[in-house]
Length: 210
Image (cartoon, rainbow, N blue to C red; front, top):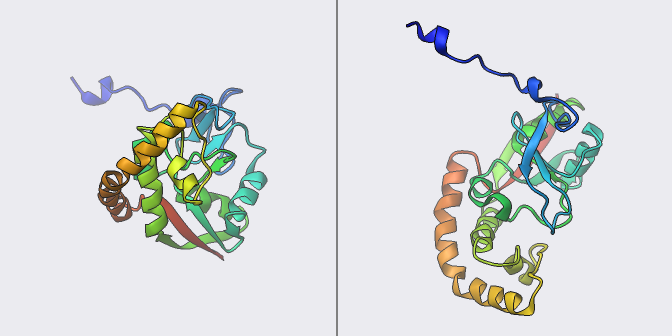
């Protein structure tokens, strides 16, 4: 039998558009559910299958997303916590990039499409080694703690969501100390692989006009 007659036709992303799947502010493709509502985030998280952007709650469109990107630097540069990173794929809901108060979770491709709307291109991208390693390290710790990002918050390097109960917070502190070095040992090859495959945890972007 001819294989071409049995293969199911590809379904375009546009077929999923509807009230439950609003358009992506970066590329216009429908947004799909990614994570259920988290207490620390206050809303479910959607993601775009095309450009990879993640959005906590709703989006007011391209201009709002561009403004959020600019707040990560200015109109010529931005430092993004990469939703297309190995750390994000590894951590899921425990990814350290899901900080309280976050709204847009950018990827390099999403940033490229957003700045294209004002006639800019991504001229340079650079993996931020130290910050990427810290993000992956915290993501690994999040998998064994009750709270979220408690180690980075204690170091003054991020916003945490501590556990509700005192004994849980105390245990999280102990876990973070005991597993700090083992988690760091695992984080190094994860981030090195991410850098090699252009999927590092934190990326500096430089924009220029066409």
